[in-house]
Image 1 (tube, rainbow over the protein chains, first blue to last red):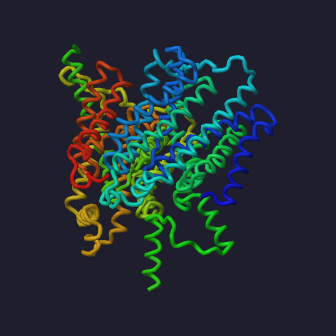
Image 2 (image 1 turned 45 degrees about the vertical axis):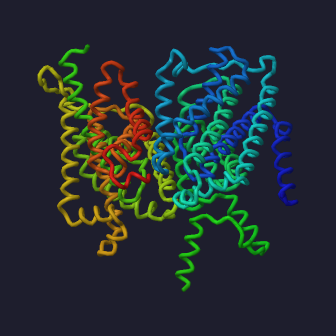
Image 3 (image 1 turned 180 degrees about the vertical axis):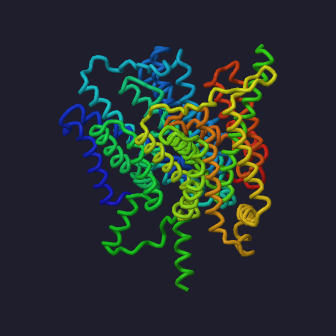
Length: 341
Length: 295
C-alpha cells in the first residue's frame, strides 16, 4: 500500500509535470519540455528490459525510430488517421520484436548487446538506402494530426499526450514490478541459472518483457514523429539515442520506478541546454562518454538509491531485514564479512 | 552473369579484406576470452590508429607504416591501462553488461575527440605507390591492399607464435581457459589479463595502419567496422580465435562477391543476416567451443 509520504510525492510530481506548460515562458521552452518528456518515456520503456532483467540494450533508439517511421508511412502511404497509425505501428514493432528477441535472448547478455547494436546499424543502412519508400537522407515529412492548431497550442497538446504516455508506462512498470512475473524477471537479473533451476521460464519471460518494452518505445517514437513532423534516418537510427537512454536510466537508477524519469530530467535538460548554447559539436560525444563512464564506474546503482540511502541514514531508520538485495550487494557484504573475520 | 575476371578479382579482394577482418576479430576474441568483455571501443581505436597514420604522413611526410613504431607500443600500454585501471575495477557479477557500457563510453570519447581535433572532414592518405597495381589473370590488385593483407597476416602469425610458443602465451591461454586453476599453478592472472588486453589493442594499431593505406577515414567510421566485427565473432563462436578467423575470411569473401550484384551498401547487410541467423539457429556459433554456450 502507498505510504503517505509516497502519495504526497506522487501528487507533487504529477502537479509539477502538468503545470509546466502553464509556466513555460515561451513555446521553445515548452518544446524542450516535450523532448525531455519523450526521453523520459523512452528511458522508462528501456527500463522494462534493462531494469527488470539486467539485459542492457543499446538499440532502443532504433525501436523508437521504427515506431516513428511506421507511423509516418502508415499515415502518408496507407492514409490511416494519425493515431490509428500510431497504434498499428506500435503493434507492428512489438510483433517485430518477437523474432529479434528470439535471436537475441536465447543466449546471455553479451549476444543481446551485440544484436541491439547491430539492429541500429542495419536499420540505419536500410532506411538510408531504401529511399523510394523512406525518403532516404532527404527525410520524410509527417502530416500533422491537428492541422488547425497554432504552434504553441500544438506543443501544448503533445506535451499532455507525452505526459499521458509516461503515466501509462510508469503504471505498467509498477504493475509488473509487483507481480509474480516481475519477481521472475528480477530473479533472472540476479542469477539466471538459479532462476531457471527454480522453474522460472526465463526465455519466455525475457521475450515477453522485451516485446512490451519495444511496444512502449515504438509508441514514444511514433508520437514524436507526429509531433516533430520530420524524420531523418541519421537521427532516428542513431546509436547515440540508445546510449542516452542507457545513461538516463543508469544515472537515475534502474531498480527504481522513477529512476529513468529522474535521469531523463537531468540528462535531457542538460542535452537541450548544451544544444541551445553550443549547437551540435563533437564534444557532445565526449561529454556523453565521460558521463556514462563515470556512472558505470562509480554509480552503477544510480542517483535515486544513493539519495534514499542517505535519507535513511539521516533519519537513522534501521534497514528492514526483509528487503530486496542485489546479487552484487550480497557479494560485497559477504566479502566484508570475510575480511572482518 | 559477371565476367570471370570480375569474379576472380572479387574473390581476391574478398580474401584480402577477410585477412584484415581476421586480425581485428582476433583482438576482439582475445578480450572476450580473457574477461568476457565485448570491447565496443576496439574499432574506435582502429580508426584512431588510422588517423595517427594519416597525421604522420601529412604532417611529418614519412611513410604511414612507420607510425606503427609509436602506435603499437602506445596502444599496448593503453590496453593494459584500460584493463587494469577501468575494467578490472568493475563488479564481477555485472561485469559483462557494465564493461560493454564502459567500452562504449570509451568509443564515444575517442570519436568525439577525433571529430574535435581533425573535424568531420573525410581524410585519405595520398601515397606514391597508392595507385600501383598488379595484374593477376586479368584481375587488378592494388599494391596497398596487398601490403595491408601482408601486415594482417604477419601480425596474426606473430600472435599465433606468441600464444603457442612462449611462456607468456601459455600463461595467457591458461588464464583464458580457467582463471582459478591458472592462479593455482602460480600464474599472476591479473597481470597476464592486462597484457592480454594490451596485445589485443596492439592488433588494432596494426589493423588501423593497414586500413589507412587505402580507405577514406572519418571519425564515425568505427561504427561501420564494429558491426561486422561483432557479427564475425558471434558467427565464429565467442571466444574462439580460429573460429573468428574462419568466419572473417568467409564473410569477407561473401561480402566482396555480393558487392557485384547488390552494391557496397546492401552487401554489408550480409554480416547482420549472418549474425541473426547464427543466433537463431546455432547460438554458440559455428566454430565455437564450450565458452560460447553461455554468452
